[in-house]
Each structure stands twice: as C-alpha cells, then as structure tokens.
Image (cartoon, rainbow, N blue to C red; front, side, top):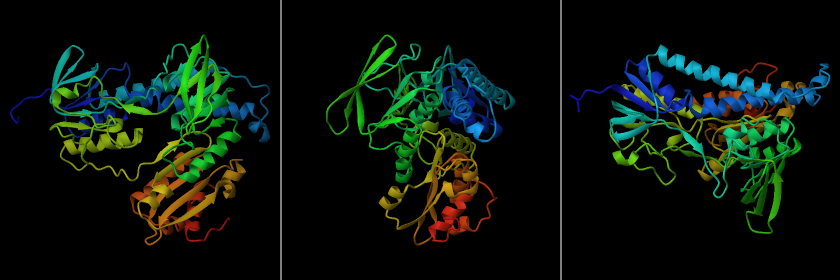
Length: 469
C-alpha cells in the first residue's frame, strides 16, 4: 500500500458543512484534496435548503411582523399600511443562498480543492466512481449529511405545495390559510413560526407530550406557553395516522398517542417535519464491508475513523446531534487527524439553538440528564423580564438556567430562552469548555445593559446571590 500511487491524498464525499470544511482544512495542511458533490452548488443542505434560507425567512418574517403588528409604532415609527411582497422576500432569501454557496466555491479554488461534480460510490476502500470517472484516494471522508425522514403513508410533493417537507416549506409561493406542522421539533417550529408571522393559521401536531425533544424540561414547558401566546395551536400527545389530499386541500386524521377518539383536521399546507436520517444510500458501503448501525449511522472512533482502514466519517452521517457546527468541528478534526496532527471535538459541549422568536438555546446536560447521570446538582434561574435590556426592548419572555454540580460547582449545562439566546449560548459553551464553575461566571464582569447579563445573574442565583430578583 505504501508504494501505491493515488490521485488524491484525501477525497471528501459531500460538500456540506462537514465535508467542505474538511476539504479546505486538509488542503491548508498541504494535502492534495478533492471533494465529490452532486448538487449543483456547494454547501449541502445547510446552505442550500436548510440553515441559511430558513434564517433569511425567519428574519424577514420578524421584520414584517414588527411592522404589521404595531411594534414599530410603539417606538414612534409610523409606517402606514403594511403589505407583504412574498416574492421579494423569497428573492432575497435566494440571493443570500447564492452568495454563500458561491463563497464556498471561491474558497475551494483559493485552497486548490478540486470539485468532482457527481455522486460518489465506493468500488473499494480507496477507489470511488463519480459520474463517468474513477478516482483513487489514500483517505476517503464520508460527509454525506442527512435528509428528511418520511412519514409512513404520507406522500410529499413539494411542487404541488400541499404536503411539503422543509425544502418545500422554504419555497412556498403564497402564504397558506392553514398550515399543519407534523412534528414539534426545531425545524417544524422554525418554519411554522415563519408562516404564522406572515399570516397563516398554524397548528403543530406532536406525538410527544411536549415540544422540543432533547431540551431541558423547563425550556420545553415554557416553549408551549410562548408559542400558544403567539397564536399557534398545539396538539400534543397526538399522532397523524392519515393525510388525504384532494386538489389543494389536505385532510388529516389525528389520534391521541395514548388512545382515544380520532378527529380530522383540514389544511391547505401540511409540513412533515418529524426528523432527519443519515444519507448512506447509493454509497456502496457493502462493497467495502461497512454496514450502518441500527439507526442508519456510520460508527467511528474518537478520531472519526470507521472500522475500514482509510475510510473516515463526520457530520450527520455519524452518531450525535445533526448540527452544522458539530459537522464543521468534526471536519476540521478529521483533516488534522489525517495530516498526523491531533484533532479533537468535545461532544459534551455542542450548543443547540432554535431560531424562533424568542430563540431557545442550550449546551451540556439538561436538569433531567444531570440527575439521571447521578449528579447532585444546584440550579440558578434568572428571568429575562428582570434583565434591563430585554425589558427596555419589550422582550420579556424567557430565562437563563444554569445547572452546576453541587459539590464542585462546575457548570454541567446552560439553557436559555431569549431573543438573542443563540448568541448568548456561546459564552456558556466557552465557559464549559474551560471547565468553569458557576462562581467563575458570576464574578466575570458583563457589559451593561446587555441580554448576557442574565447569564451572570443566573450564575449568581446558583449560590443564592442574585441582585435583580
């Protein structure tokens, strides 16, 4: 093997956040790199039909809601009658996507990464076919990401626009009268909130008894209150058994999760958002003797090696949360490991954010998980309505919650609901990465007036020393 000549030192399969970052970092380290991507543009789901376009619509819909809902008038900004130009809003979303995906192509050229256009299939562990060519690589990184999990018995047709997945919900040409969101997780709530702000009646149907599975219990309870207050209808502990489409209308049959009488619900748009699954179909994993686990994921060690020599994997296709920033960190780490350096990702400190308004964010252990792990804990919780900046901005919803070990005071988890929670959580992640105690955070000076002061006050509350409550 040492005498074999390869076309590339590293071949990355997939150009999403994990793949394109791995390719660029490997090239920066002096390796000859190619990246196989069959999509017409780089950036994967995140940049094309995920993180970026959804945030563009979230921001646009928030601006519209502030103008149409009278919040601007409260500050003395008189706009007159407000109307929605949905085509223009969609166009600016598309422009954002175009700019960022084009930016990745520029970075590939800058770092001398070869883009092999097409989908890759293994012939053996170091030989891959892409479109009409065969290439060899000393190392192959699988970074194929994930795709929408289908709901059995329900057919998605994004072009028709009646039953859609997240991709279709990003491209609707009109505001639905009634949108039913199947799934009360991150994607469903983000996209549901976009269309609610733009004028749709939104009903969220969730099989579990609370929204946002995986988040802290207090956050999940508060989420239901906030979304109800904003006008969403929530049907929790409810499953969808049938979706029947006739023309431009859908009729859903709903049943309580724990049994009971069924009911029907009519909608002109149904968003199926029950999760995502790893993309492994078509890779030819059988040709190299690599079988996914029971959840369809590719198992790796802590260096992101699979059990097949020379084959590595990162991102949504391996175990762990399906988050772009997790994939990016893994992409950097795997490239460094291949180059003979030490690439490490601390999977205990991966923040998660829901980009609704307010935002929901967390990092580390939930209170429930901390107790289940055997920790004796102490908790500090500070309401945003007591934060001067949030109160001044008329943003009273939410809180910051810090969970610390009762014996060592080391921070185990931080959870927050605030308009800037996604930005605030970075402080908590940094503190936890350095092993901070709640006292460390409490004695760190925070600028006033800022939303982040709520993190300081929550840390002070852990030991019973808050100032503003």
